[in-house]
Image (cartoon, rainbow, N blue to C red; front, side):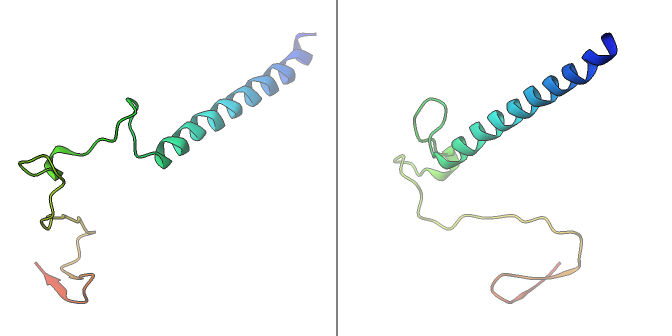
Length: 82
């Protein structure tokens, strides 16, 4: 009797966990589509604001970590030699 219950319990647990996984992934996809945070407001990282509280127009420094090659081609076609 108990041996015949295991496949049913296993199947029910599998279906439940699969449903939970899709539910959580759906919440993530919905959050990625919305620029608002959990409070319902659009948030901006503080370093992007100038002294008046507006988004800055200046060029921002970006850093990219590579796999360790000595010479690397930049997006504009130039070469970076460290």
